[in-house]
Length: 256
Image 1 (cartoon, rainbow, N blue to C red):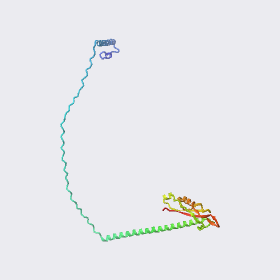
Image 2: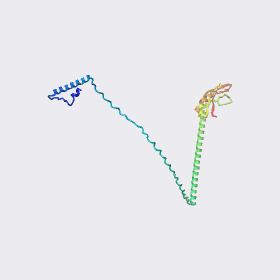
Image 3: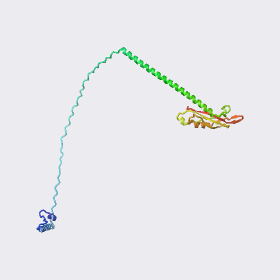
Image 4: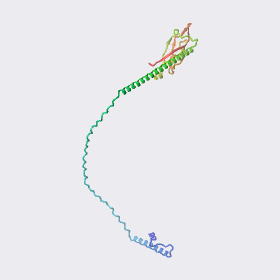
């Protein structure tokens, strides 16, 4: 309250006026008097009256019943009008122009000549193919004969000059077991022949077996294994058993 009186616009303070002292004294006296009056009222039992709260505003609502809406009447469905069927249009039949018999005969003659040329050309091609096939067969036969001659010369060169001639009457095989067919060759349907050359010792056993050229790699091992199991009746010369070199045996591998 003192601050309010001091800053009141009614009693302004002059900073540099001659009467400033008296004005400040008057303001201070009024402030003290007001404090004394308020203190005396409080001691006499005076109390400020509380503010009466305002009554809350109440909003009243009322239920209003509206009449039912009218039911719309369905509009009548439109009746489909079937248009009359159009009358069929009759197209005029095209009139084929008259064919000149001479033109028709020329066309047939040209077609016959063209067909004849095609047949002659086909026959000529077949003749050329047949001649080429015969030429290839002759060349293959010549190559086969040359390979056979070369194989025979190689076989004669491989046999030593001092080797005794093969004579089945002087020694006979006692037991021969067939080789086992390789499973890989069976799976691949591989067939073939394999020739093995070895020496029959005086005891009738096989020594130093080896595979000749032309044997499939899958047939080498079973052929050598089977040849080692062979047993022979020894060859007798002058009452003594002797070895027989360059004995050959061919194994035929066939899938039955």
